[in-house]
Image (cartoon, rainbow, N blue to C red; front, top):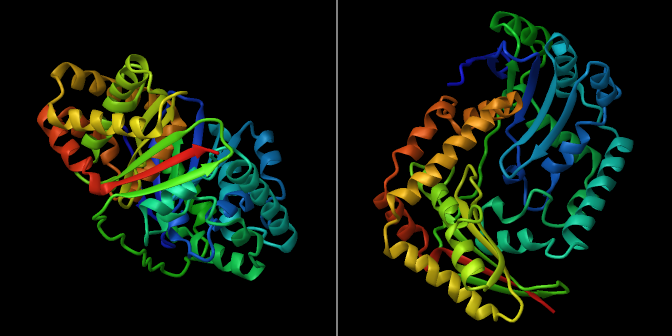
Length: 411
């Protein structure tokens, strides 16, 4: 059970305090409610660009890394479809260094033409290296655009096209920062060796005078229900054929999410999973195959990706996946198989909670999802699942009309 206290400053900053006196460390985690789903279709990749820009210095901190090294800390960040997250872990007595850095870049990030040009070039090179010049690098551009027609999930976090970042103007970038990187659009978590009352005083000291930003009115397009299967055949200079099958599924907080998540584990997690056992080890149709869920705030995807073995036609390989899914829907799984994946989930949760950084990040994300206490109770949703529930969800999930198939073929 993860204990926490949650409160808000007058400027709208949400604060969560989690005390753990068993560690000498503390993590300061800042979640900004800005991901690629909040971007305009003609200005994509901005959230990811700011993941880089936020390390360019602020009014009172020229070099974040240098200051953190002096304090014995380390930091990093990541961007997803739904959020941008920054985190610092350091010895607990040095917490004010982290709060100084994070509050200063929230209040007065240095956004100038030189800093923008530097980070634009970094992102452009990343786009070229990982998405253009790398085999299968454009997979998620293709698959996202196939699965989503109106929702911003139709582009990955790097953006639709590198020209969006390359052509970004300083005033546009400044407006983006002023809109989203404000206290009333952030969740701050302090997790580790600190008393709650001390934490409250420090948060007020460092964040209390930051002005509240304008209220954000999100108008994210709702994806219409998919009523027919979609398929894309893409040919490129790649070594082997790949099959991707993406089925529309519920959002992260839907009551059916845990059942679908377990289905992904049963089918495609590890060497003992059904897809690997049947189609890799027994039939040698694929050399690797995986199943996973995107777990997004809005309607997500259940994805199967599979590397077709040499000498196997892509048509027969795709048919083998569909046949296995049909078989899975037709027969309830055994209690033994279900209990095995439940045990895996329990073990994963326990191991995940050992790390103070994971606890801090998860507290922020569960709060953004709408129920911070779900961090403690969600496991009960998994443990209460029955074979009949799993089968019912599988039948609904693997409806062929909800499927988006990408054949990524070697030229």
